[in-house]
Length: 242
Image (cartoon, rainbow, N blue to C red; front, side, top):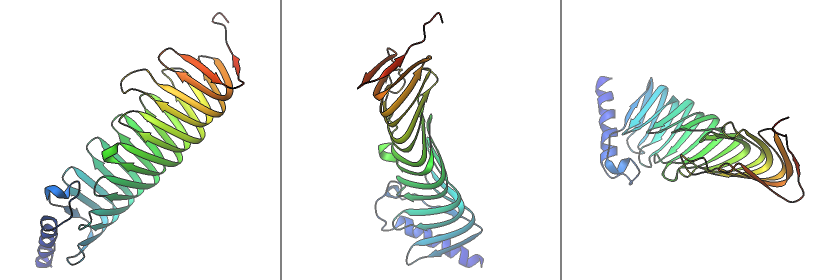
């Protein structure tokens, strides 16, 4: 049994070092470490199957879960059972995670993701590491630069702090004392600056510092704390001395 185990580990090392397609991590021919309670490896297909307390590591990328299928040739991993993938400045947890060349991540089932100071949550998250771009669907949530967005679907560009939410959108910002709802929202902000611009459309209801605005389309600017409406709208102002 020990001899067979050593032979299997050696086969994995050869598969990594010889003739693999170029990928984000495999281009550097870094060894892959796979640890599990039960582990099988097919040297012809270069597919490893692991069950029970699975731990996969290559370079700075780590994957954990209870069951995993890893195609070393294509650098595609499927992990399920309290799955987690960790890279520098990124952590994703979900019921199931698929990782493609350590760059494209598809997470499904109560997804909880952290990218730097930003948080993503939803039933499913599609995330592209090289583009810092993600699509969140199913009870989608995004928190970035102090602003929180809930929606049925959210597209997020995390490097530039830009997000588009569609379907039952809700936006909150404690820094700007803002709470708003609508059918669609677009939010942009320069990282590290309080210059956020929120555009809401579709049955908009927004409250900022006690003042309320309702209308088909509303724009809120954080820099000058201004509100602009488009179309017939209603504005309710609370006097400062009230």
